[in-house]
Image 1 (cartoon, helix red, strand yellow):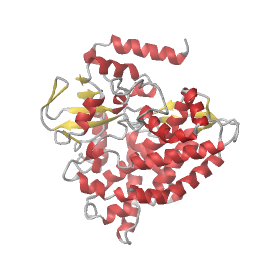
Image 2 (cartoon, rainbow, N blue to C red):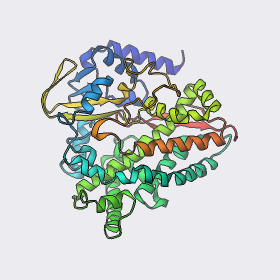
Image 3 (cartoon, rainbow, N blue to C red):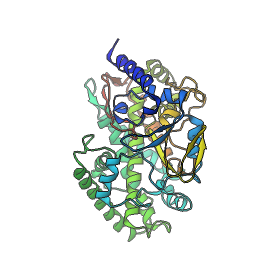
Length: 427
């Protein structure tokens, strides 16, 4: 038995041996070593609305099946985003308060707001990702994708995450912000600093994270000051600066919007680009089908977004007692919707663990969320994935994964730090 199969079998044995009340699906180590699957499988079968009483995150509920996730995600009257949308460790809550002061309801951007405040704030930036603006962006994204791919080495091992996934998303995000293009990889760095705990990714300590946050907010304060005194533009900072709903917001709220847009524009797309290469190598019959019929790129993109699930969860807080799946969720309880589990729900998706690029309903997935908080940039993500694969297929008969990826140590961002590949030849 190879190492990967042995690791998965050990994880399965442990997942089913644990007393159910001790099962904590948010263990970041398991996400990093890709052994999460049997834990969620067991919860879907035995306890789909599951309470973890003790964890590094404090007590919380896990919602693991599709229909239950939908029930929470679409019920913003009971399940609030205002106390945060990520399951944070108790340590990180304390340390982040040292960095930014006590948390307030403006600190997370519009995704951490409930109606009636959420809608107008969200609408302030939606023109940047509206169909007409995306149509204007598409030729530029395609040109940049081509330049990135044409510079890749042939016959030599390199890191796909660094050379392609990070670079394309940084270019697109810089355009959406009208951020200095030569500094675009700062956006990637700041995103990694916001989402990684000390000792993981680039973050060395909480002080290091504070220094990065200060640098980021200083740069975006300069952008705000430049845009608020200029004519309205098509970039997101200009839209925030000139929208009646956001132009008078306080600095904490602006910082929350910046963090949200940087992470949302960076992590999801870059990890799905990497995930597509990994998945096609893991399922070589699907890669052969794609090579035989490039028209399958569109459905392949959606299947990758489901199979990868680049953000594993979203959190809510109960505003009132609520019964779900025969369980009584109490007011103020933390409730975690595990999109990564819902996307593998056998009762909704046929053969969910397989990667099938010609599914009948490829857009049937939870990865962008549902309800009022559905991902505002979902079409930007799909556009980048569609274009990069159209350009890949023109150039390379094969991208060969030559080693297991290094995965992100996080129960929120389900991604890749590195992915070693070789491109044997050009088309």
